[in-house]
Structure formats: C-alpha cells, structure tokens
Image 1 (cartoon, rainbow, N blue to C red):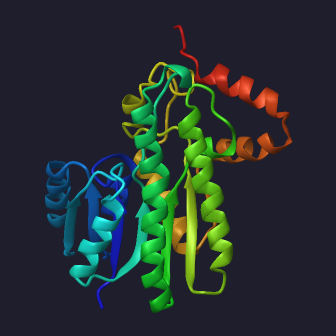
Image 2: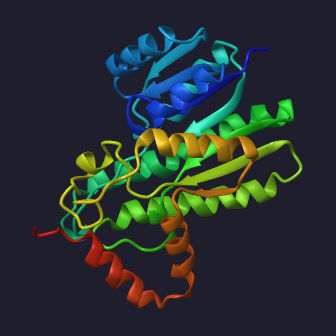
Length: 261
C-alpha cells in the first residue's frame, strides 16, 4: 500500500512547506484548504519536482461538517493515511468584547473541533494498521493566556493539552502524536490576524515557514511529544510555569499591544 500524508491548511505558510517536505521524502499527498485554486498551483509546483501522487480537496474546515466530508472522500478513494498533519488554523486580534462572535466561533470550529474530529476519525484507521503519526500544530501561545487574542491562545492551549493526553493514551500502540509549537513565523498568519503592528512581531526577524516545517518534520519522525521551535521560545515556555499568573497576563498584553514606532 502506498504511503499518504494528509495536510490541512496546505495552501500557504507552514502547511505549504510541509507539503513540499513530504513530497521530497516520497510521500504521496492529500492536500486540503479552502482555495482550490491555490491547491492546484501547489500541486503543479510539487509535481514539477517530484514523482508522487497528489489528491487535493477544497474544504473550509471552519464548517462543522467538513472533517467528516474529508474523511469520507479519503475513504471512498481507499487511501491509507500514514500521517495526518492538522495544520489549518487562524487567529484574530483585539479585545474579546469588541470581537465578531461568529468569527470567534469559526476559529473554535477550525482550530479545535475539526482538529479533534480528524484526529479521531483517522486514529481509527491507524489503530487497525497498528501504526501512524499525527502532527497537531499548536503554538507558543498554548503556554499562557493571551489578552488581545484570548480565543486564539485558548484554542492552542486546548490543542497542546489534548494532544499530550492522547499521545500518552496511545503509548505502545505504534501511533504517536506530536504537537508543534512555533512562535511568530513568517507565514501570512500575522496579516490574516491583523497583528502586524504588535510588539510581538513588528521589527522582529521571524523564522521562515520552511524552517519551522523542517523542524516539525524532524520531531514528528522521531515521535517527539512536544516540539517547541527556537531556543528562546523553549526557555520562555518553560519559565512561564514558575511566573505568577497575574504577571503573565500583564506581560502578554504589553507584548501584544501595538508598537508605536
């Protein structure tokens, strides 16, 4: 049976780079994203350099039924998924009281609900095979509350804790769950979330999506449970556990605020 990897949010950023990495490593690809046009462009780019099979599925995973629809399509094509990369996600910026509630719910549907559904659905098949790997993309945001991006930080905290728990449940099964926690990255996320003026990103040299994806790929293949990209990010994520919680939220709020110059 040919080996396939399914990557969500594959049309840009880290997901885009993961697609190219797995093709380089001779994995056949199932690529999903909202934009079929962008998926077709990526498909043609990869096929110009690699001899792999590529299936594209245009779906918006903020739609509550999209995960089941993707699983159904994959099952009907009788494709065996060796690796699932739950990369799709987005964030919003600003005070929660001023937020568009529908957009916040869409974020929860995409960042949490669809990830949980896809993980559960494909775990059933991996259990039958006795092997498999899942990479869930969280963030360094997962390690603390995030004033001005409250729902986004909370969704990533869920992804981290959920993934750690089920990796422990699966110990010895031949299946591993890796959680990738990048910090701010050159990926287009900042523009979409409208945080380009935040102290968190403005004026900083950020790692590229390719660098983060290469790091994530290595940790996934080693079966690492939690992979925090960047030495400083690793130190901060662990120091937070020993910092008073009221101080943490004040510091995060300060960093998230706009840089004036």
